[in-house]
Structures are given as structure tokens and as C-alpha cells.
Amino acid sequence: MARKWWKESVVYQIYPRSFMDSNGDGIGDLRGIISKLDYLKELGVDVIWLSPVYRSPNDDNGYDISDYQAIMDEFGTMQDWEELLAEVHQRGMKLIMDLVVNHSSDEHPWFVEARRSKDNPYRDFYFWRPGKDGAEPNNWESCFSGSAWEYDEATGEYYLHLFSKKQPDLNWENPKLRRAVYDMMTWWLDKGIDGFRMDVINFISKDPDLPDVPNPEGKRYVFGGQYFMNGPRIHEFLQEMHKEVLSKYDVMTVGEMPGVTPEEAILYTAEDRGELNMVFQFEHMELDSGPGGKWDVKPWQLKDLKAVMTKWQKALENKGWNSLYLNNHDQPRMVSRFGDDTKYREESAKMLATFLHLMQGTPFIYQGEEIGMTNVRFASIEDYKDIETLNMVREKAVENGEDMQKVMRAIHMKGRDNARTPVQWDDTKHAGFTTGTPWISVNPNYKEVNVKQALLNPNSVYHYYKKLIQLRRQHEIIVYGTYDLILENHEQIYAYTRTLGDEKLVVICNFFNGTPCFELPTHLRSYEKCELIVANYEGDGSGDLENMVLRPYEARVYRLVY
Ligand code: NOJ
Image (cartoon, rainbow, N blue to C red; front, side):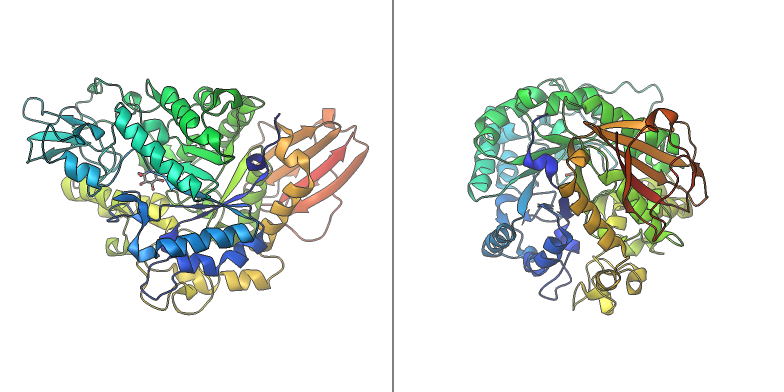
């Protein structure tokens, strides 16, 4: 397998609006990020991924871009951004930017032009269609509820928006649009960035007929993913992007890809195909969704987590490359979702980190994860800011009369604002995030959960992450070893091995608060040397691998030499 820096790296995601505010307006900004770079360097991360910082009317917090080559006023200036890049590089870290080119903002000059007239030169930068039988051109549902089409008075046609109506989809069939995107990417790469995270990049090729989704249940709108996820020209577009742009730089790329299968992911990431380095897949993020989708919350099952993670680890082995994540700005906090965010918050946060970071792939840490930040439970819907959540409330509670308490429960578990409360830096007002009023309230647990505390306590989640990151540098096997699941049917323990040459790692994770017994499978017992390399409980470094009672949420990693 080819050795690459982006396989050996740990990435830290910053959601700038919620990271650190430097000027007291309540909104995180670039100078705030600069002020925390030493903290990130100390943590040991190699790469920083910045969620969008471009000019935007902020309908979807920067994922609606009105100028791809300018910085959002609230975040600072291009000079601030240049200083940020220089400071990141000076500390030996890298910076990757978010590339949001499935859609732009409706305030982007391309769309402003496009909506003027049917023969405007920018018209075909977007998807325009006449209505059908006095209604929308097809029955597709937006990812943010309601129809994926918006009627535009000026020309009497509808435009497609898979997300909010202020995020019209760009038409990749149009070579002029593709050229414009490639030029913009080149402009950023020439400024010295180290790669891109690509927003819903497997949505850019749509079935050209934009057909109706079969709708036996007679729903008003239906998710049309089969007609735009991994669409007919997707590999052609990505190969063209690679040839025209990416191949000219030594950069890292990760494509966000809802609905991607392992088979598709191999096509996207195989090194000889010239597309992307890795993808974000979503299967493990869907384990607690019922048939009604994201908001139809059901308990996740350990056996399903084992099946999904193992499927991805094995499928991409020697064929592609995995990214590893358990949360980001769109997902609930991992410790609340897969661990225990009360009594065993620290133990379970460390266990989950062990579980993830010891797998094969490039780990992504989402801001605040490294101190074990948790979900938030705002009592009032007024405290929520996310467009996805608010649109859902409008549709479910207001239009369909669903019980508001039930809706709030789903928001508490799944809402994106769980991840977007400000980073908790210390125990002063607003957790030290801002001297003003934060754009979204701080999680009330900031007095207990904050960076200042975590730095002072040698046993904190933070120090554990630091150790995991260092281990990756010391042991090649963590990056390149092959993965195998063991104890497949155990109901409480997730355990696996990694193998490289005559060396193995045994990763043992107790996913619950019981005290199950771990027994190393007999075929693995003939080792000559055994050493504990990391564990989330103090003391007792020995342990009998053939008969080991684990404590609640205990995680241990042994290195065996055969
Ligand atoms: C995925 C992004 O991560 C999410 O935050 C955004 O709302 C959608 N794509 C649309 O850009």
C-alpha cells in the first residue's frame, strides 16, 4: 500500500462560527482561530479542516456561498485568512478548505444573473424547468423538508434546490460551470492550501431527465436520492476535476458522500483512478434512524455498528482509503449518542476515541470532541438556529400537527445544533467563547466541561486524545495494519485486531456500563510478547488477555508480537 501523508494524518475540524470569537460580536472568527492554533498544535493534529468561511448570507451557516473568493465579513478579512494560513504552516500543520459546489447561494452573482431571463448566459449554471400540471416539475423532496423546487416569478419557471431555497443546485452538465469551479479551486490552491473537503460532492451529477420518484404511498414529496446520488457522470466529473486541478498539487481530498456504498467508495478512492483520496460515508450515522429517516430516532445496536464498520474496513482494504469520524457539525455529539454523557462521560469519550482512532483510515476530530463535549437540550425551540431543524419543525409540528414534545425529543437527540454550541474554553461567562452574546447559547455544562479544566487534569479526555495521536506516529501498524473483527457476537464488547508483519494490535472496547469478560480467541494466543500501549483506566497494566473483566466503558489496546 502506498505511503501517503494524508493517511498518516489526524484532521481537526473547525466550525468557525462556534469556535472562538475575537471581537465580541458573539460569532466565532478567523482571528479567534489564530489565537487557538497553539492549542491545536499542542494537541498534535496535523491538518485543520475549516468549514466554509466564504462570503455568505448565512441561510445555512456558510454552506450557501455568494462569493467563493471572498471571506465572510463576520469572520474577518482575506488578510486575516492569509495570516491564518501562514500561522498554520509555520506550526507545521496543514489547512484544508470546504468546497461547496453542488450549490451556491441564490445571492451569488451567477444566480442573480441566471434568474433574470431564460436566455441569460448564466441560466444554464443552474437547473430550470417549467412546472408540471400546475405544480413542481417533479416530486423530489429537499433535504431540508418541503419541495426541492422553488417557483421564480420573473421567468415563470422553477429552479432545483436539494437543500434550502437559498441554495440553488449548480448544473455540472454545463462545461462553463465546471471550468469556473476549476478556476476557483486553482485560485485557492495557488494561495497555498493543502486540500479540500468537498460538500455532498456525490450529488453533482443528476439523472438528466430529473424523473419523478415512484411514490406508491402517495406522499407529497419523496427523497430523490436515487436520481442524484452517485449519478451517471459523477466519476467523469471527478476525474476531470482531478486532471484539470488536483493532480497538479500534493493535496488531500475528502468527499462528503451521503448514500455511498463501499463498492462506489472504491471507485472514488482507488489510487489509480485519479478521483479523491477518501470519502465520508454515512452508514454508521444512520444506525439510530428508523424507516422515517433521521428524525425517526431508534436505539442503535452494537451488532449493527460492528457490521457496518467491519464492512467498510474490509471492503476498502488495499483498494481505497477510509475516513474515520463519529461526529461533525451535522451530527449529534458522539459521547451522547454512542457513549454515556453523564456518569461515564470521560470513560466513554475515551473508549469511543480508542475505538475509532485504532481503525484503518484518517481520523477526523470535531471541535470540542477532544474535551468530551455533549449534546445540549434547549427547552425552547427559540434557542435553536439550524435551518434543517427549523424547517422540520415547521413541516412536522406546524403543518402536520405532530406532537411538539416528540419533535423536541428528536431534536435533542439528532439536531445539528448539538454540535454547534460554542466550544467551551473555560468556566467564565459564555465559556470564554465570546465577551458578547453568543449567536447560539452555550451548553450549560461548561463549568464542568471545558478546555481549561481538561488541560489541567492529566487524566482528561484531552490528554487521552493527545496520547492517541502520538501513538499513531510511533506505530506504523495503526496506519497501515489490516483490520479484523474478533468476538463478532459479543453483545457488549467491540474488539478487533490490526496486523502488520509479525505484529498485532488487539483493541478491546466495552461499549456499555456493565463488566463483561474479554477472552482472546485461541488462534491469537501464541504470541511471544505482549504490551499494553493505551488504556482509559489507570493502573493494572498487565491483565490476562484470556480472561479479563472489563470495567464500564473500558478500552485497552495491546501490542502483541508473534
Ligand atoms: C453538508 C454540510 O455538511 C451541511 O452542513 C450542509 O447543510 C449541506 N451539506 C448543504 O451544503
